[in-house]
Image 1: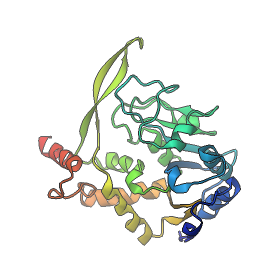
Image 2: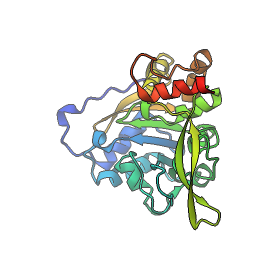
Image 3: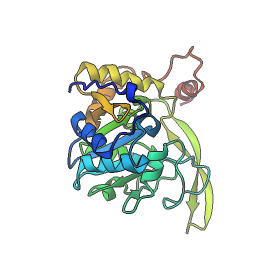
Image 4: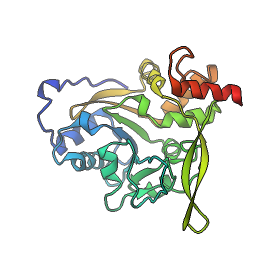
Amino acid sequence: MSSLPVDRDKDRDKEVSVEQVAADLRALGVKAGGVLLVHTSFKAVGPVEGGPLGLISALRAALGPQGTLVMPTMTDGETLYDPRTTPTAGMGITAETFWRQPGVLRSGHPGGSFAAAGPLAERITAPQPLSPPHGPDSPPGRVHDLDGQILLLGVTHSENTTLHVAEALARVPYGVEHPCVIADGDGDRARTVMIRETDHCCRRFVLLDGWLRASGQQREGAIGHAHARLCDARAVVTTALARLIEDPLIFLCPADSGCAECDLARASVHAG
């Protein structure tokens, strides 16, 4: 895959039309009729005609009626989750707007939910195990199985949830438990359970940039005003899995770096 360098910084305040964003997406390589998992920062992309809804319209236009759009809608897990009402936590205004639209389905994981719209939305948002939240049998795992694409729109691989799928497949030795509120019994009561996941700061996920660029498996260019990365989910998992087999701790910050999240993950190796 080649790069498509476009610099729009000089027109940073100019509103980009929905049609232009859709054209940018097609030029980058978004597949009509495909499955597209999007992690995005609207602040980086905008201003876009119609705001976040305009960006969503452009994404769906690029995919076409047979395409399926997927976004993370994760929550803090501190209150009882209702896919119809619980707001996202730290996912950005585009994802928060997307799951509230008519016809969009949202998965039922109490902390690691995703939303999807399109012909394969029901399959992608089907029930999943509590742990791991982002393993093979989860929305990003299903996007991988469906040979979908990943679009990082104004964000980096640090936000690429599919890398947790690779960690699960590699059976990395680290894992951290987090409390999460779930419904108890008939749903009238709530209880807190501990959910184990491959959690760390994720900053070293950016290593994927170099690995994918070296193998020509990442396209880059401008979408609106944002720098975007587009890659196949299977390429991400295959590439990361090969590195994790060589070094299971490659995505953790060095022990002397002062990263508390990675130190906690590293400590879990010894505790196990």
